[in-house]
Image (cartoon, rainbow, N blue to C red):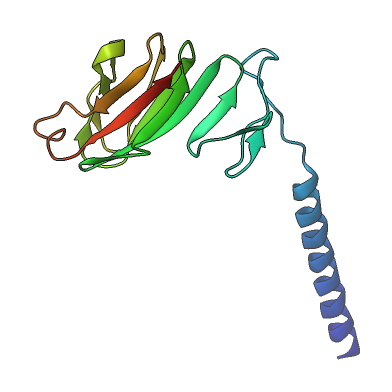
Amino acid sequence: MNKSIISIIIAVVVVGGGWWLYAGKKAEIPVPVVNTNEGNAAPEAVQGISVNGAPVEIGASVSVGVKEFTVVGRPFSFSPSSLSVKKGDRVRIVFKNAEGFHDLKIDEFQVATKKLNGGEEETVEFTADKAGSFEFYCSIGNHRAMGMKGTLTVAE
């Protein structure tokens, strides 16, 4: 009986030690960083933090030369529903359709995604070459009339 207890204790120590080593090593595995901007990327923003002294808008990513937004479409709404950039900014919008059948259009910049099913996404990119307030909207059926629209503000 004494050998059985010692064998069980040794097995528990070996399994527990193996688990501890495995869990500890997993946290130390380095994650490779891939820079798609070839050295031009600025630090990615965290909500409520400023980058280079300027407040960062929620839903926007900061990178040199491109202002990126992720816009989520749901039945009769976009989130966020307002985007702000400066004239001359390169704008990238990642449109993620969460539910339903939608697209995203900005007529003044000839921007349009394909019509997407729920769970699909598409990215569009353009230069905001004129100042003003411009409506983006879903062109499917009466979605725009039912409130599926937002505003892109381009400041001088």
